Amino acid sequence: MLSRRSISAGGLSLFAGASIVSTAKAFEGPISDLIESTEEFALAVEAYAFGYPLVTMEMTRRVITNVAAPVGTKGPMGQVIKLRQYPDAKFRDVTAPNADTLYTTSFFDVGKEPWVLSIPALDDRYALFPLLDGWTSVFQVPGKRTTGTGAQTYAITGPGWTGALPSGVTEYKSATNLVWLLGRIYCTGTPEDYKIVHALQDQVALVPLSAYGKEYTPPAGVVDPSIDMKTAVREQVNRMDAVEYFTLLCELMKSNPPYEADAPLLERLAAIGIVAGKDFDKAKFDPAFAKRVPEVGFDRIMLHFKDSDGDVQNVNGWGFTTKTGLYGTNYLQRALVTAIGLGANRPQDAVYPTSQKYAGGLIGRNYMGSEQYILTFKKGLTPPVKGFWSLTMYDAAYFFVENPLNRYSISPRQDLKTNADGSVDLYIQNESPGADRESNWLPAPKGKFILMMRLYWPQENNPSILDGSWVLPPVKKVG
Image (tube, rainbow, N blue to C red):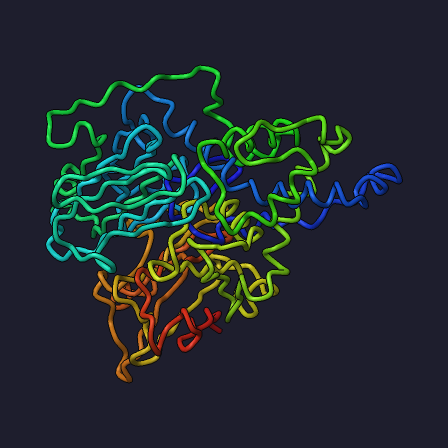
């Protein structure tokens, strides 16, 4: 997710940005009203939403890879970034962090030659290694759900590449030159398990095809001092005027071509100077649109959160979507997910229900740590997943909450106690519910807080959150 202050290492809450949903800005007077009623302006707004994922991916790539060597959440192109531990309550680099999987990630370019990704044997441990193209589509997902946990080797090839691959190497074709690996490996967070997962991370290898099977030392990254490393990526994208934005979009489409299904839209976009494979033709674009197109375009993207007709669901106070990872021609949904959940998985791999309010969800009341809440799963109705589930606590700014247990999420790995009737209660409050209940306690701050479920590898058949046959119960205020 991209926040106003950070960029994501991927896979964060799909609704951690729900609070930023804006209403459309009012027109700025008769002149703006006249301009914005034109067909050309509407087409430019449509083009803005269409290009938002590709432009955002590129700006994210620039920031993440603008270092000489891997450090923290950043690393040069083609080098593997390995996050070694879960963040604590002091962590402020990325909003909505997780305490369930350790990231193993990289940006790389398959334009000149394929890159070979080697994944070690995982000893039945849950992991997934989604590969995203420049348009944010998850085009392949090697991992336990899809390809098992044995050792695996893949060659990620570019859109125009043809050739022979070494024996035992499986080809994954990317539609774009830009590829983002967003690997995640499950870890309990204990010192012993950290050691095991670190060893697995160290065996994940990414090398150009020409270096496969040889000794390979990646070159140092080149640091570009002109790249803004402080301003959030989304803010950098949103502050571009339309000419700058469409100029970059057209440049990016030369090496990251649109899909065949995009042809009808691209045929119309030619009227305002946007043609795949060519420079942006500013002569066909009304300069009077330069400021307002990005403003109205981003508002239109965020309004899709409310008018998406099933793309976004709100059930029992939990907001979530199962339309992620692959989008077809649903450009607004693709842009919305880019804005509030960049790097989102396919729903078969993960769903992220998020709750900001209780008793009616978005129209209910804020959660407050001064109160006590309970989430009850009836017997046999804990989240139906084949991977794992967890419930994470965030403060109002989507950061972890300091607490005496150093517990930032709760899941079955806490050895949850079961009630006599087989149900499971999770206690959500600031103060301890008592020593006999602390195994089921998710500590809250004293003030406002936000809850997020993570359902990795949700069960696809009844019961399932994917088809609505399983429903996440509401959080209830005690007393």
